[in-house]
Length: 446
Image (cartoon, rainbow, N blue to C red; front, side, top):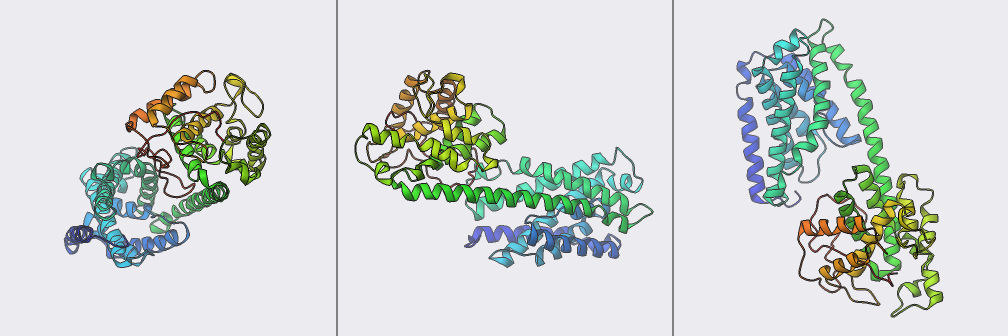
């Protein structure tokens, strides 16, 4: 939103106007002002802490307001906190957007909750029925947030309309549902003989969970920084293969998703693909950049890079089985590969995935010693070598993945098979159809 298009500004202004309309009946609701003020101040304090320390938005207080107050009063609760919260430039526009979006979402949640008799269920602690209107309110809250977020992505970030709303609702539903349960507990305790003080106790475990969540993301950021530093070091040393690591990581993910692997293993295979050549840091630069074929002695030196790489990452525990892929990605199914001559099922599955992805990008990239092959030619070569050099299952998965995104007629020489990763080792958003897919083996691949 640094340079916000005029149409996006109009959209934000329209959403803000709708939020104001939702609050117009507030004087006629006879809601207790002390309750509105307390929830508003509580949300503003939580929002300041969460955004400054952890990032993100704290929804339990908003949803508690939706369960306790009439819709116009609930719509007021997020406004001061959103207008005062930290924001990037343009600050005023971002704060207005955040306030208007949250206000409309809470207003919708409160309306749905009240229409289903949720306020009476909260007052009477009518369980399990109280869960029904609460769940419907959370769904309405998520739907409004997703609908508005998709609009701003399409208008401000110029994301294509067919992709702007994709995945927004599923990604938000689970975390906001947890916040909804916390908000419901706050509302029930608020209406109990113990009053608002008891309701505040619900925020303690939520605060602990936020802290744990923030620690996880800090650790993840440190992992990404470690990988980024290693890959950049390889790219600096071997300029001819710059970008190769990211493309192998993306191709490995394409294969893993076709194989139906779980998300954790897909992430590990992304790491494996990105770091598979990190051992080249131990190989003399003159060999990596040599024009023409290598001598047998030079090839033996090059073939040490999987072992060098394995030694370099051995102590990085979060890589898991990616370390085995780094060590064994040049093994062949017939046992003629290196460094240990493993055959068939002896080769770890992750290494068999990376081997196909590595050869796929090598064949469709222009190197110092060869020109890029067209994607269809590379795919045919992969299929020809399946069963001897490569695992047929991995080859078939890659062929299906390339076919899923369409196969271009040819590669542009030097384009790296059409892969254009945005930032070294940063996590890509999947599924992303690559502009030109990738393919197959190269006997002399370095």
